[in-house]
Image (cartoon, rainbow, N blue to C red):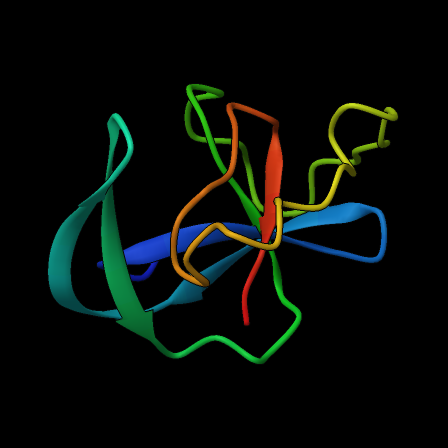
Length: 88
């Protein structure tokens, strides 16, 4: 039932699967990043190795998961291995 390709985002307190169109690839520090279209600015994207979560799975945030990336990080690059990132 998932769109292909997709990313997992948090809407409210639930996981949602959002279709995206992949674009340019690059490196940011030691991580590979991919620019995508199809997300609203401010979307909370799940990053890291959490596996595929089912649509509608309830989530809650911890202080580490909600930390903002440093100002010097590229907009499309995750700043750390935290559980979520924010689309810009």
